[in-house]
Length: 376
Ligand code: BGC
Image (tube, rainbow, N blue to C red; front, side, top):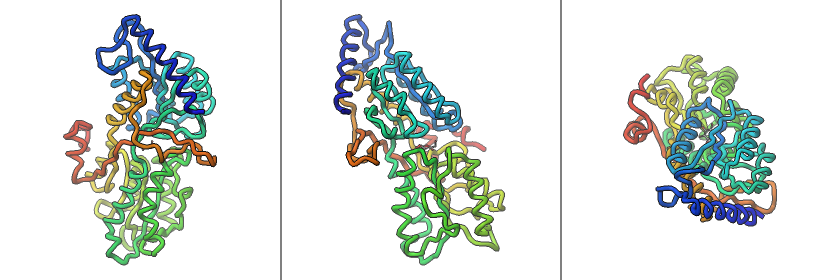
């Protein structure tokens, strides 16, 4: 079914490319299907929110790179994670003539209506960073290795507490992200593959008793909500920097959630040096500053420039009727409830460990941030 859809898309696209070259279109960039003059091919880019730094960077990078490749870009942010807005924006992109859609979904399974429309209109869809679920209209998926993100976080805690050699027990609390974001299954699953054996053996103890992914989920990846949950746990368990229950580690799947945890710990009187090991993801400016101050231990760096470049090559390949470069055809089934798998061909970029020791090389030398941006 999916193959047939792709073939129809490719046929439409090839006709389009041919008519462009017949009009003298075609980019100076070898390999780009976009027209360098006259009518440009329009690509729709849908991002979930403006309120988190990473999506602004993703959107900016995508726009810049697609425009440099000769495309016209319709870039939209769905307010602050507003699903109806994302649905409306996608419908507008399809009716507005976008030839490919790149979508970072707010909720993996809330986009069936616009995706049906995209399919009918022969518009291929690339799921960006987060997989779109329960739809046969998704052609490709570009993301980071999400399981590895979680594994890096879990392994970090294992290594810092030296769980192989120490008896413990050590106290840990678990936080992840929005339950509607399919990535959460991979982040939490990857981290727990490292931590669960030690919870089972009793070396790690979750004093709150909140051990399940559903307990650890933080709606909207909200810092306010993770702060509130951490504050509840602190008062329920009696965690304190001294004279109370010692908190050794907190697993957090990303930086916005980690920032709420940091705030809750500061409010409870923890200061630098008394903090538990605390993980994160994105190398968000606020979290990198917290790492420098000793208020967060690590963050997984996902270079959004790499992801954007990869997606631009995917868009180019699709519009030229060739197969985009993919490196995973096993992991991402977007219809797991069904016995028949619907694996989405994916490209997984590599996430990288970041902490106080390597942030300069990783983030400043690579030109991702300036030194000034990381000053407090
Ligand atoms: C992304 C993370 C991000 C989180 C919150 C996830 O889907 O992969 O990088 O921190 O959403 O926006």
